[in-house]
Length: 235
Length: 235
Image (cartoon, rainbow over all chains, first blue to last red; front, side):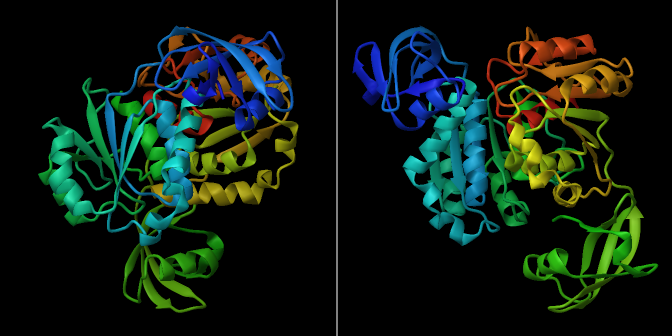
């Protein structure tokens, strides 16, 4: 936690916050802060700044908040991700949040196990918890938007055209002939398939929607590794 | 598992293998192979090729093996990684193995919890299991070497000079002034600190040993995300 993310409900007046729970435990148990210490804070959707500890005990953390600057720039990037295994999804949400990805579509694919769509981790609040961890890590304040799309064909045919807006888009596909470009200098929509990859029908649908299949050398990376690898290559 | 990694003990004669356990379960339960199917195999430390299933039941998988080509090139890269939390380490070993990293030094640092060094996951066999998962994912056959160095100072002062051989080396450090270079086109040794980063003394020791501190934009990424992000930037 390199930044303590603050929400509207945390404020007791214009510049004062009162926190309990996870953030209190972190500040007292990991950071070992004491009254007078200045901690890095950020206001959800807004500025980052400093929180000066005015009270810290087993029950409550109070701080005076001064805002000072903008959070880091968001990535001009939309992620279309075949729904991974729930535990992997949780970690990927933290990772995506930390890298500044702001729009994520979790989509179905032939090789996505049906049971994944029943996972309690897909609950909006549980997703948000992971995204907050990513923001706190990267000192960001802007929560990504996550959309669940459990039917592949209607998503690709009806919704994707409005998302892509004719911008060139890439689908990570180990069998592709083209290498993933380096730092092409423009906004990107990237599709990443499930472990085992998109099936040929899905690749064909994505190509019809405007995606170019690209590969990452001759190695097939786990999706968790592929996401930061691809983001780093593209930006 | 995009490749079934075979070891000397699996061979019943020159070209035949007999497998049980995890690999048998994967081939029957996930790949749903049947006799006559040709699967991608690789021989530890050697060639990749094809295994034609000759017998598959609840007890045993037998294949005739034909080798055909070389595994993907290794990365000209040495990783010096402050020992992460054991669960994170396990995943990072898979990730590192999949990316073709072949030499990993797990080192101590002020912010590494002492208990991490007592983890059963540091056992050689447990480390090897994770590396094999990474190789199977990426269709590689060359096991990385992993070295445990539980004392920072002797490692940096006495051992690192022989590892670096005066080649320029990088230390990921969010407070660095320089950005991580893109694709510098040469072998790299990269040091990644613990969550919370190396302390100033450690950075100073690494600089004395020949490391240049570099950062990745204004975001502080989790170490699990930072590793593939950095590898992708550097190669």
